[in-house]
Amino acid sequence: MANKKDTPRSSITIAKEARREFTIVSLLTLSALIAALILRQTFWVSLATLLGIVWVGLALFFRDPARTIPREDGLYYSPADGKVVVVERVNEPIFLQREALRIAIFMSIADVHVNRTPGKGVVIFTRHVPGKFIQAFRPEAALENEHNLIGIEHGRDRILIKQIAGILARRIVCSVRPDDELEAGDRIGMIKFGSRVELYLPTDYQALIQPGDIVRAGITPVARNSNVD
Image (tube, rainbow, N blue to C red; front, side):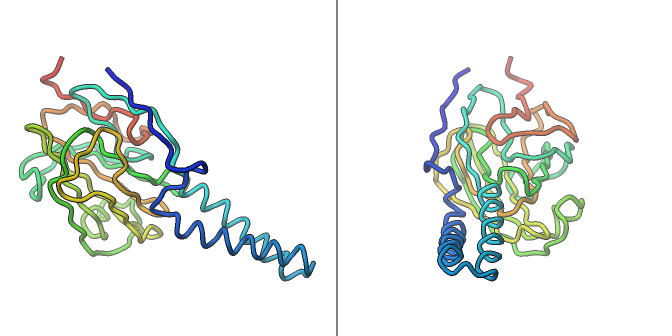
């Protein structure tokens, strides 16, 4: 087993997909703070305080911590931080086109929102599908909500990642394209303000987690190939 040290993208480790929003709020907060210090008026003090709270919230929501990514043959790792809500076998007609092991992870607003690839492979296709914005923890969200699909192939394995929007998370960012070559734990995008990520694996993989478990993207092993010792 080998580990890969993840390198932070910036000193403050804000996800690159959210830097535009973070920069705008940072500039507004700084401007309001300067005005409050110079004018000493209640309006500017209140505005600076409010924007400061928003700034802290965004820093929490959009953090992108460096991680040591494990690598082990025959394992797939979690694509998202959060709580496992579903582990079951289903028919996957889009990419695997057969029965698959489905693992669904609910991401709260307190979780890291950056998504990572569960294993090594080449991106075969991506697809954005418009839809509704109902609560991501409800079962029908997987079928009815707006979502993004990422199909990855490695050897005989085909896996599908589904990034699902929720009632608050209405912006899905996919940072990979077809023909991109990925290593386990590489960043593949994010869902802003949390939501749900689903992973579809071949049925010769056995789940290592169960509903209620807490997982971390790129770190927690979620399935093992039953044909690999």
